[in-house]
Image: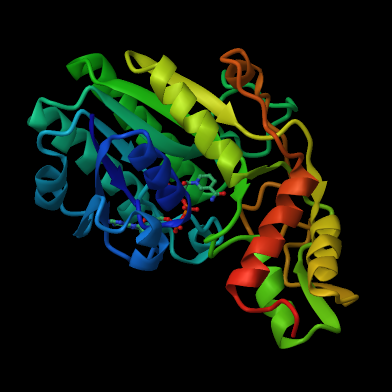
Length: 317
Ligand code: NAD
């Protein structure tokens, strides 16, 4: 199959590209390298076509997507925190790009399936935990709203133009090459000063973490099983972990015992406005396909912290 991966030079995208190449697909990456890098694709160099371009431009999307059988749309600004200060960014990077991908797929006439990287944040402060796919969409960040809006655009394209859509609502995915999120943040802070660690919020935020290999496994399985119609899957873990525990694990990996300082969050203990404090997804639907996460949340955090610390040259200092 000819497959386009938008955001394929990013964290999740590059792991996905490696798997698609290994499965023998003809892969084109469309990425503007705003947060991704060509270095993330070094293992598949020469075996993928990389189009450096912006998915906010419809013609660029058309050029990359023409003739493709499937598109994995992973390009986005993934930083929930950006919402609070720069909401337009999430409209431009997450909604506009999704519209362009859908429109380019329709015009191309060749695309049978779009696989979309959505997020647990579409549920907002869910009152049902673990949260199932049919829980209402009530985002509390513009990031979450941008993902919900993108899902709805894709739903209409699926109904109107018969393009299969697979939506994956990921929990926090962690692993090598990730350059955002709490683990990366803690590693950078501890590399500057290993005796104190500032935690945004009250540290009691409790969320589910998934190791990247588990996330990619789920992505490919869902894409294979649900290529037609419109399907939604939660992709997360069966347990969760508190931010203070993540701080302990990251400190452990670096051999540091920092004093924890709680600062900068919102009055009700969130890390930033729009931060969902408690997130655990019901993953029964993914499990019904035969998928299971191999690592618990805490194991995923430890594995990711170790891999990132190594990438950043922080081990053995
Ligand atoms: P990332 O920043 O590593 O990857 C995003 C990629 O998209 C980067 O390579 C970036 O350069 C590219 N990009 C951004 N805007 C673009 C544009 N306008 N045109 C072309 N390329 C563009 O982030 P990630 O964590 O790998 O996230 C990948 C996707 O998964 C995103 O859609 C994100 O919202 C979603 N997601 C991630 C997580 C997670 O925990 N990592 C959780 C839920 C959803």
